[in-house]
Amino acid sequence: MSKIPLAGVIGCPIGHSKSPLVHGSWLREYGLRGHYVPLHVDPADLETVLRTMPRMGFVGANVTIPHKEHVLTLADDVSPVAARIGAANTLTFGADGHIHADNTDGYGFLANLRQAAPDWQPSAAPALVLGAGGAARAVIVALLDAGVPEVRLCNRTRARAEGLAQEFGPQVTVCDWADRAQGLDDLGLLVNTSALGMAGNPALDMPLDGLSPAALVTDIVYTPLMTDLLIRAQARGNPVVDGLGMLLHQAVPGFERWFGQTPQVTDALRLAVLGQ
Image (cartoon, rainbow, N blue to C red):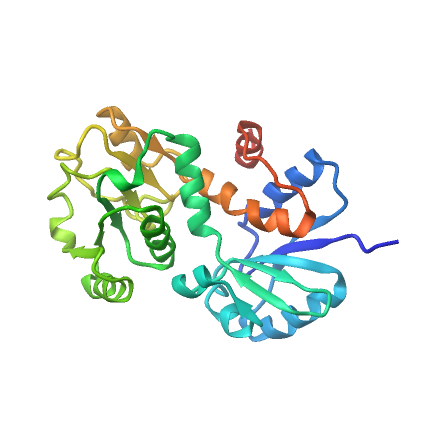
């Protein structure tokens, strides 16, 4: 009898992860053999764990903080998109222990927008991205690949934004944090990739007075689900998309590779992950 396929999410800490809820829901929905488990792995043990997992029946794993950059140095091959982003969140193990590293965060970001805001046209107007961390890297790559003509990057520490602009080329321009509310009238998309506005973090002070009423506003934060940014944008008539869908959609490619079924992101899944 063939082994029951195992997958999981690796992080340190890992108790907060909603990935087991997502994958567990899909396994039950499609009646598949398999299990998906949270794995607390200290950085010093990462390589040993990864090399051992295929022998234990693991077919893949998601990777979260603080391992997303380190796994690139341990993988046997790295997808072009993971190499550009500089981080991986999805690993697939071969039966021989071969480790393939990929990054599906940008895919999840775009799939969320396309599902929740199908009228958004990436190529029609510039985008403004707030933040310059790992999530911003994935979002920038996704936006450029989708055809956004210009990505304006604004971060509290300008030097970090400048570094990303140099890396990703002339389509990425930098604005000072103090000037973040200027030049909003021609935007097609405003994205918060920073932790500002997340529960337990400082608020995001982002004036929206000059924002085009047609601009889509999204926040990758999903705790709370409706951040202050989204509440204010919605109140003034802008279309908004919350960040939970990015988490759900980024899980799709891994589940498909590991368990052989393309899962659907549904309202029922959203409610299950939200505990409703």
